[in-house]
Amino acid sequence: MDAELPLSITKLEDSMFADILATIGDGVSVQDRNFRVIYANTTLKKMFGEDIVGKYCYEVYEQRDKRCEGCPVYKTFQDGLIHRAVRHGVDIHGDHLTVEIISSPICNSADEVVAGVEVARDVTEQLKAQSKIIEISEKLLRLTSVAREISSGLDLGRILRRVVK
Image (cartoon, rainbow, N blue to C red; front, side):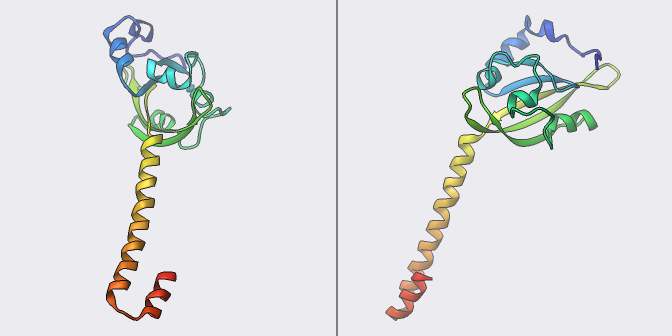
């Protein structure tokens, strides 16, 4: 769909917006209605490669040949609203990563959604840390339970049965 964009993506490169977008720590892209990346900031290019502009988002981020189920940009194109999702992808080095995606609409003067802005934040390390915290918390709960059993009585047989259980 060749609909008029509310701002010229080609002029974006020469504006202060390009400087701002280049310094943001999250990946930012603009996708047309066919899910083709028409703009990508420096962070996103470092994550997925310098050559992502002109490619389909799904082939870049998840190495697929069709649109992903639950795609937040697709939902934005459907209803014109902001959508969030956590997706799994593969970076430029072939490493698996998890990104939180926030998709927002770009509308023309007739208020039609003509493109989508996608902000991608790598949350891989955050999720690993959360998982480790949960694992440690579960161990601490088990140890607390054992400590309660030990302090609740002096029946060694009962204590050992509870500890083993």
